Image (cartoon, rainbow, N blue to C red; front, top):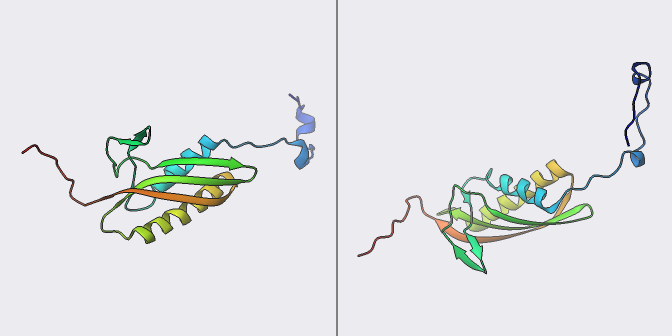
Length: 135
């Protein structure tokens, strides 16, 4: 619906009731992108390898983003996150930091309540990169 207001009525217009403004729908993919970006804000956390038919293709990379799958239902969201962690960081402490950070950032940006965050750690990375050689 399009409404045209004259300059005389602009200053006197009353705000619309909440029911008259419409609804806001946030897609699963939007929440996935917000969460994937939020994971990069946590130190020592990197991306997971891409998977084809359940098999890892390529390697995990600390510089890439984590893989996130989101399910939005009503006013709640649940997240499934695949990531890698830099060694020797504590896996339990780091994943708890990621969980807390994701819940806060997704709620801050979308207004959705995050009910569950499942995290799968796919690899631990050492500070020095391993190079593979044929001997």
